[in-house]
Image (cartoon, rainbow, N blue to C red):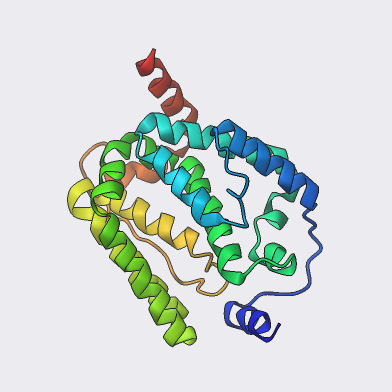
Amino acid sequence: MRKILLFFAIFGFSLGSSQLCISKTLTFCQYGFNQNLNITSATADWTNPGTLSFIIRSYYLQGIDGLLSVCNARQQFDQCLGDQYDACMSRLNFITDGESPADATAYVSLFKTMEFDCDGGFIQSSRNWGCIAAVLQTHDQQLNDCRKQYDAEILKTPSSLCQASADFETCVRSQYSATCGPEVSWWACERTRRGLLIDSDCPSDSCSLVAQEAPGSAKSVFQREPEVAHVIRSILEQKD
């Protein structure tokens, strides 16, 4: 119990919340998510987020089809939870139900990352997925090293959360920038930032994208968010 309270203190959790996550609903929605991705493991959920993460990664490495499969499953998961989504996608929700802080963080982080891949960062994801998937596969060790360095720093000095997070984002970003360009470099940074779940703890932490003047360049990345449906339609038409 003392460890859990310390975890709350470090990451600034509030014990009071008016939101409610119904366990049976979450279990049902997780089952549907797993069914949509043909996941047969009975423990591919918040009790074993490592297994679930491994399976999601295997889909990502299949290319754009794998990304679309994951995004479809995530969208249905979101719709299934409805207005319970935010309450259920909270580390505190799982910790109070007896899960370890590490598993709770890993599970919520995974879904927040998918949320970015398939929503806020979908434009960048869809049109650069070939390069993104290649880096995921060929730079796996370097990306893991970035994570290990972050975990070690947080364990050593919990008060350095914001600086360690910024360093982690830069480390991940560097794996993509040279190969995939500035747009994906921003995508990698923002994806990492959202997965760290640090908005309330490090509000000044952000990922910048240097504007370029060429038409269709990074300068206009954020002006095309309404085109998500158009991008999906174009991808599907190319497959037909």
